[in-house]
Figure 1 (cartoon, rainbow, N blue to C red):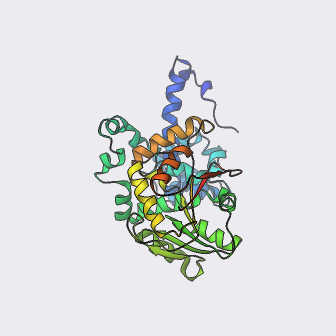
Figure 2: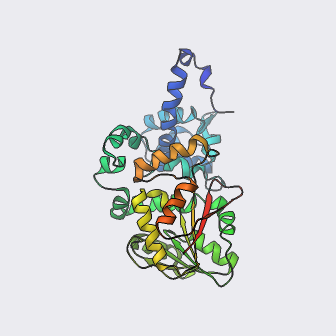
Figure 3: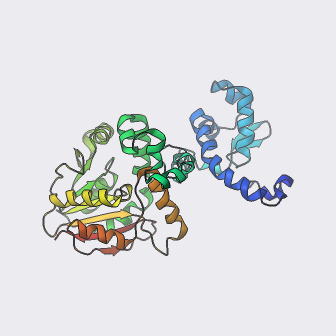
Length: 344
């Protein structure tokens, strides 16, 4: 069974209706998937096919609501009927515990208030353009990172998403850093230390992870004595960073406007010996990246007040912060780019 063809629906054959319905559906898919995860329905169906009655009884859910949910979920092949029972559909299997895809993390993240694709943020786009303020601040009365610091559950979901989503390309990204045994890596905004740990294991470097005190506490509680990196908590705009040879900023610079980004890079530069390297890792805007990164850039403005930049725009920021012109490093099998510059 494949996902339903919307053009088979007579109602969708009216001029323009199929397009508008699919646009609406784009926003509904993450919400439906998230409901299936949070109620435990997808986890239960991953174990074995079950009837709607069994699901509602075992998960303490309203029986009529479960029946309606399953029918709605079938329309996107999240689950599918098998006789009197329901099982996971092709989309639903992406969310199973043993599936290698990162789609579960990505799709459910779209419904989170901090995600750049969250529909609520885009509904405030016009007001953001009038005021120059990010939509998250307009909606919640404070910036996204202030909110994450105050709400641990939200912060953990954000940290887990950012930590996990580059796993498939991590080896290629770290290889592009040209690390040498005995060097010290400082991962700025490094979260739960996945990049640093990989660098230590594969290249024999020492490593520090610098992040907010809240993130560091969570990271230490997760890794305990097994961490291959030393964690340091602080504010990377003003606090002293550890001394090192290579400083990585993976998906950090794009969270901030130009003025903030230069201030961040300058503070990192203050810790860096002359000749040491800084590596910016994120998705650069270019003709090759097409419309996706243009949408991502505007979404980053709505969520964070930041933006995606071209390598030339990043070079301008680096120069203003006291770095030499950078060199781009091609990363195979990845949507990420790496820009490396040396401290003057």
